[in-house]
Image 1 (cartoon, helix red, strand yellow):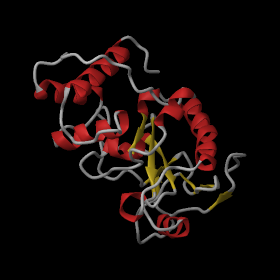
Image 2 (cartoon, rainbow, N blue to C red):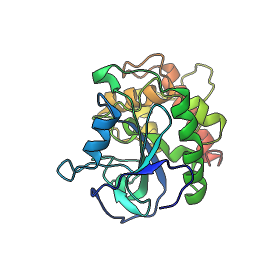
Image 3 (cartoon, one colour):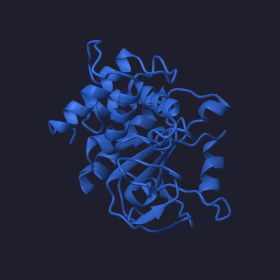
Length: 234
């Protein structure tokens, strides 16, 4: 593997053959007490977990699984009809202790390393901005990462993710069920409705994450779907 954006390699045995073409990027936090602990775990055959890349808080990028291989980072997950998210995605782990060990903002050096790596991946595989997602988006009932402190607007400014829609409060849907159907149409697994709404809020409205459908949530889902139908989410 030769990549000027990678500082070193630590190959993980935890990978296998892809069954789908790459069409997504899934962003995670490591959720462990140290970078060394996370790296060791992802390269331990007994743990059966891995990612294509890990980015430390100082900006060090570690390559673990070749992009043509299927890394084991997403677990049971779903996005836009895809149930084998591992096969369809590149997984990037950002070192952060996560909600269990003292969740904190992602340092500038870490984000500065993520941006060019993500840009290269997105351009290489022609990944739509709507398919640059967090682990919580694809596994809302299980995961919270990369969480409400992740700087999605920064990615959006570089056209590497969708921007948060600016909406005026209205009532585009008749009831909560209609909002959940709209969330499903956008891409979420809504089998646990409250978890799906919380995941949506964590990504699109991090100031208030309560899992409850309200006028702002409905308006935001409506705006995102409208942009998608207009072909504005590439």
